[in-house]
Amino acid sequence: MRIDEEKSIRITLNVSDCTEGIYLRWINKLGERCYYLFNIASESNEVKNADNIVEFLRTADFEDGYNPGTSRTEKDCQRTIKLFAPLADRDTFLFLKSLPEAVYVDMFCGYENDEQLWTGVNIADGSFVKDRSQLQDFECTLILPKTFNHEL
Image (cartoon, rainbow, N blue to C red):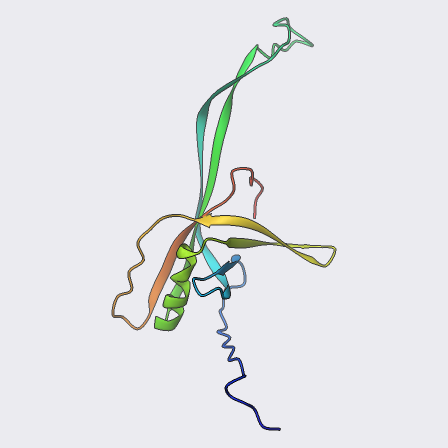
């Protein structure tokens, strides 16, 4: 059987020693679906008091020895995770550089009933400079949706 090189697709798999991390998929500027398993460097939670105050239409009397008060301040929580790909070669670095430019980025969240679960995420603004070294770490910051509060 002869392979027609004009109609064939070349798929390159690079094996990583990362066994735990965050698996992302995104669509690059050319419309190609891209996948990568990133290592986790650190996680942070930024918590701020929101401008909104929730008013309770309840009595201010004690109920079962507890007074809930008449208002509460809402909280804004933003969880971010620093991701990295260690010692990426030139081609891999250029491939990964398309991630922060992507409009659609999804994070793999496991399986439910043999169906893949993905959630939309974002990548923080930043500068990504490729130097002349053969191998270079790629780093970016993942921004989780504000309602995404459970542990990974």
